[in-house]
Amino acid sequence: SQQGEEDPQALSIQEGENATMNCSYKTSINNLQWYRQNSGRGLVHLILIRSNEREKHSGRLRVTLDTSKKSSSLLITASRAADTASYFCAITGANSKLTFGKGITLSVRP
Amino acid sequence: ETGVTQSPTHLIKTRGQQVTLRCSSQSGHNTVSWYQQALGQGPQFIFQYYREEENGRGNFPPRFSGLQFPNYSSELNVNALELDDSALYLCASSLFIGTDTQYFGPGTRLTVL
Image: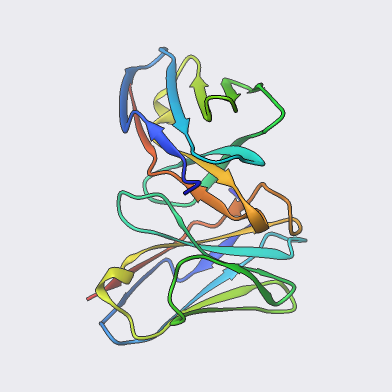
């Protein structure tokens, strides 16, 4: 299965701290994406990293990709209470089909 | 907020009934995908439509069917509802087929009793 598996399942941090979330997968990929979901609503696209890229930044987000280890990490710096959400990594396969992991629940305490 | 809208927001049905969920894609997007998200799980791909034709299907039975209209809006139909069909149903549109970034709607919460 190409399903991404996130780690840890849940993360609780203090506002201002950094949050690091990991994703592992099993097969070769075209790209890997991270999405955020608030309270069981729609998913919001955060960042996409292609298989030939190693690191990408977007605002307070930093994503790395290690294709040799089949893993990716998402770093959120200087976290805020508004970052509280579920985070999913998604592997892009044929027909742009996204295969999601089970997600990470991030709680940022004020 | 994306430009993708879904209706209804919530829906309650009983086992054996049929349901139709609707999605309006973001302007200019000609590809729509549907996902099922059970509680505590990640979204699971149901199928994708491109220019009114099904273009890929996940591991869902034939009682899950769809349509895409010339204006690129879409419907998901589920027949003979089962209790396990209770989930959040998400549609996502993309600018054109092969574009990897997908824009999700807020979802329809379906409860089957």
